[in-house]
Length: 102
Image (cartoon, rainbow, N blue to C red; front, side, top):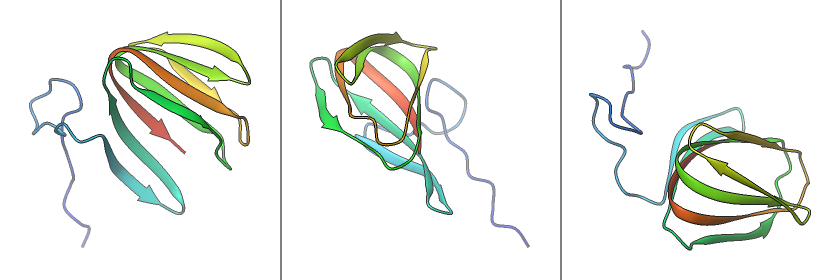
């Protein structure tokens, strides 16, 4: 028997909303994660790196993601792929929600 279906809403769907938490791990399996994160306007994530490629998609808002001192502005519907080991940071220009796969 399989576990029950998990569901929720990250935007404005019919399912229960994910809520206002800063970070929520939606799925973790075999060392990989899908993470839902929220940011307030003006919030920053300092320079860091990951040991694996990171896929980030913007669900809402506007952010600047900087990789090796090269800033890229992203808005709802955009995505970026950050290579493993690359130093990167994030600055939130307006309230934002993102999904991260790493």
